[in-house]
Image 1 (tube, rainbow, N blue to C red):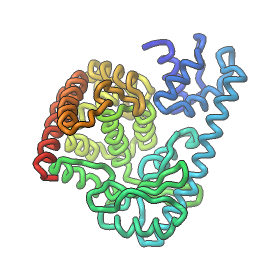
Image 2: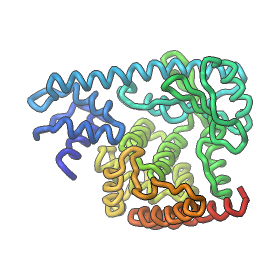
Image 3: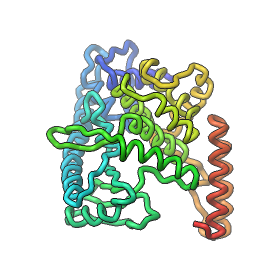
Length: 369
């Protein structure tokens, strides 16, 4: 771990748990902020840095830039809050009670919610309410630009408010394998229908997932980004802060069932090892923590640091050929490139993903989708 990385994690730990950080070594603030931006945590780091005292605190020029980023994020959150309230009201007027996913539901768990970055709103309504919900937001939010499709094969319906987006979800995650989709649907029913939470957000009532589903889904979402586009420390910090917020309140048997049924217990433990070692999550707040994950977590750490938040670059895989035959060959080769890349960290998950990818490819070519 480089000096810049150590300083970055010291600042992240202070942002998550406090108190204000003290770093003895000279800080290259530009390098630290570049790393923070790569992992979509620059506002969190700026918030911590702005509280520092002593010789290593940021210069006045740097501090001014940090406060500008924090102010910009606050403005975005205030605009998103307004969109959230309008959207929830439009859905309730249509007799649909949405469940807030990601974004706001996670930000509220941070010591300072205004420092968590996000740019859209995700509302889950379920399959049965989906079409009615789409009609409700079109009617109740006429100034929004809507696009996408409300068909039964779509994950969500989209509306745009300038730079901000609202996603109305018929399902919380897109699962292509039929058997796996059935398993996930049972978890979804449990956490998004039967055991939701009611919270008060500055005088506005909201529904959010159950505590166990919050933990599971936050990791599951991060895991899928790790498999596809790359995951940053923002998403990993989300998991850590959720675990901390719900410490001593989680049903570990339910969590164990979720992770085992979706075949992600080993990835969970490897990410958990990093949450403890890098982010400072207390060991007793990390369910199923094991030091035996250290070797896997070391390889995982390098992947995370190289790829960052949605920054995965696979070289030739990004340059897709235009001719149909070469396009199919390119996609087929890409499956194996991804397999070998993932197998270096999670061999079991790599074989599972390879099998699923090949099955999807054959099914598509045979016209079964």
